[in-house]
Image (tube, rainbow, N blue to C red; front, top):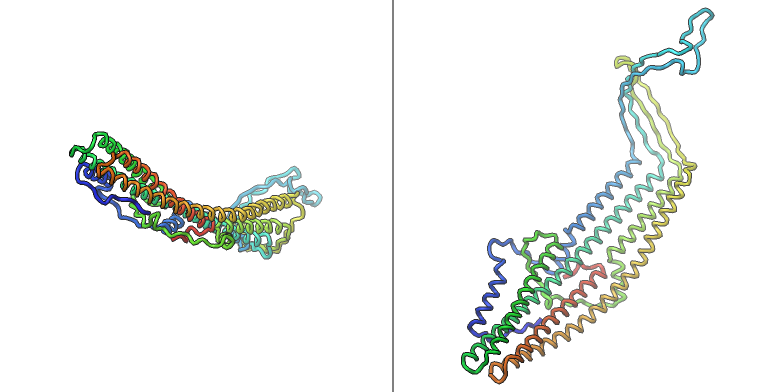
Length: 457
């Protein structure tokens, strides 16, 4: 970007004002300053993709999904438990429902009206083991949990791309504010020079007080714009630090500028759409979500199949620790759900609807990708033409200022024409800055549409 600077700066009050403005700009840098971190546009995008809170949160969800895989796999592994216990209980013999016969004339073994038996004290030190031999439901659930890990990992890529896009967009805004600050400083320099010329002419008796007043007003306006530009620059730097998840007192040095950023290589739209379909993390995430939903559906359908397992318990049991006898129970168990009141069918219908919903959104997303890429191509083409037009406009505005200043310096015209030309140059500089910003923003938009923001340079 070409910024017009005067070739001659007169010594005097104008120079003093410029020195005051420069001192005002650097005053906040006094005292202890943290180390400078240099960043290019691509480095800012990759840094945001690696460490923002959104990415860290998505990574934590991957850990959660991996933990669910381990939980699901537990159903296929041996289950061992030890439940040693001591009990003491009594019984009412009448609750047996029968009497022990006794010989004629003999007393019944148990009171027919019931009697308390016990207390019976029991030590039970047995353990139990169960192992699934064939459980299709558990196996499908493990597969579904693993598909969930894949879907969660795709969400990390989405969060990284979103963070990179946000940081890249703010980086372009920061470059715009840097360029605007430089332009306003150049405006102030010219305004200060014109004030010096007006005062010199007035002192020499060839000028009028109105020219001095106009020049002072122009310098005051330039100073106000410079202060506003400085404030905007500071605010966007804070936004950039936040987007990069860096400490807010970090000093950033942006190694790029609006004019130095490389122009995007515009490829064929069809090829760009193909790249986007293969690279966009949200499409990969939608594919993974659909696969996870289908795997979950398979796990639900597997619940209609039988399961086979073995079980056993073994250990000492007795009425006292010195009278324990070892007992055991072993067996094989087949479980086959026959009727569950329609619960399985309801779950199947629900999961089928979930899978259909994901598939609909996935197909719609593919259409949106094509729209995003084509829109970015349109924006780039339009922005390129706007940059060319804005550069020509600034070139002509600089010529107008130079010619008006020469006439004013020669004393053949007042500074009204110079003030008007400066206003035009101010607008032209801002227009070129906005055009370059739109161009680089379109570049970021194309990278976002293709899913390649983290690959920016």
